[in-house]
Amino acid sequence: MADVVRVGIIGAGSIARDRHIPLLQKVRDVSVTQLWSRTMDNANKTASDFGVPTVVENWEEIVDSPDVDAVVIATPPILHLPATLAALESGKHVLCQARMARNLSEALKMLEASKNTHLVTALYPAGFGLKGDRVMRRLIGDGFIGDIVDVRVTSVGPSPGGGGFMDDPSVVGINAMMLGILGEVCNRWMAPPVSVAAVTGEPLNVVPQSLAISAELPGGITASFHLSFRVTNSLGNTVEIFGTRGSLKYDMLVERPDGTIGGEEVWGMTESETEMYPIEIPSHEERDRTTDSEFIESIRSGVPVYPDFEEGVRYMQFSEAVAQSILESRMIKMPPEPKMDCWGKLL
Image 1 (cartoon, one colour):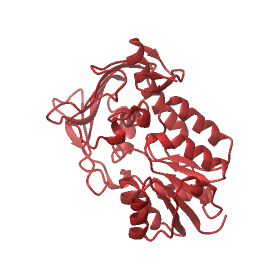
Image 2 (image 1 turned 30 degrees about the horizontal axis):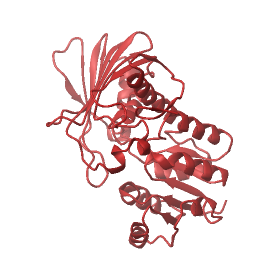
Image 3 (image 1 turned 120 degrees about the horizontal axis):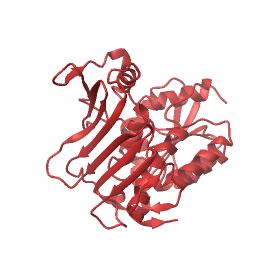
Image 4 (image 1 turned 90 degrees about the vertical axis):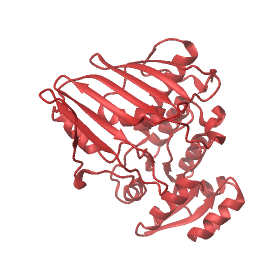
C-alpha cells in the first residue's frame, strides 16, 4: 500500500460531516478522496465543504476504485451488508457505522466475509458509555461491588424526532431506539445474556417506541431493560449494577450538537455506605470515539481496533433475541438462530 491511505466515504449525513471526514483529515497521511451520498446535491455540498476531490453517482464506484484503499460506510443499516461485502471483495478495508447490520443474519455474513480476508474491519462505537468505560471495568474487575446479582438498564425519554428511515423497518431491520447501543455497553461490563424475553405494546411490524426486556445473565444474574420514546419527560439513559458488596450507576446523557457526549458520570456505593457518590473518571482513563484514527493505525500496523465485527455480532444477537421474543411471545435462548428480517417479519 502507498504511504498515504486513501479513503472513500459512502454516505454524507451528519455523522460523516461531523466526525468521519474531519477526523480522518486530521490523521497523518490520510486523504479522503471520494464521496457518495444518496442525493447528488448533498454529496456536492459536502465535497465542497471538506475539499473532497471526487463525487460519484453510485456507491459501487468507490468500492471498485483502484484509487481507494479503505471505505467508511456511514449510511443507514440497509446498506451495511452490501457495501461491506463489495468493499471486502474489492480488497478495501472497512469501517462501518453502527448498528452493524439490519439483523443477525446480515451481521454474520459480514463477519464471515471479514474472516476470509486479511483486511481490517471495524465498527464505529456508540458514544454512550465510552467516557467512563475503563473506570467501570476496573471497578467491577477489582470487586468494588462484589459479585453482580442484578442489573437495571433504563433509556426513557421523549422521541428525539427525525422519523424518516429510523421508523422504517425495511431500512433499520431489528434496530430500535437505544436497543443495540445498550446491548453494546452492557457487553463491555458484563457477560452477554443467556436468555431474553421482551414485550411491546405496539404492532409487530413497526419499529417499536417502547420495549420492556427481561434477561438472565450467566450465574443467575437477572437484568431488566426499559426503553421508551413515548414519554413526556426524560429519565435519561442509565445502567445500574447491583452486587453483593455494593452498587454502581452509570449516567449517559445526550449527545451534543457537535457530536461529543457530555455529562457522563459514574456513581457508586459499598455496603457500608448509605447513599451513592460520584466516582472520578481520571483523564488518563477517559475513552472517546477515536475509532477513525485507530482504524487507520490498524491498517498501517495491524494493531487491533475495537469494536470489531465479533463484538457487533454479539450485540446483534441481543437485538435479534428481543425481536424474536416479541414476534413469538416466548423466551429466547442465547445466542439465537438468525431468522428475523425486520420487526415482525421473518427471513
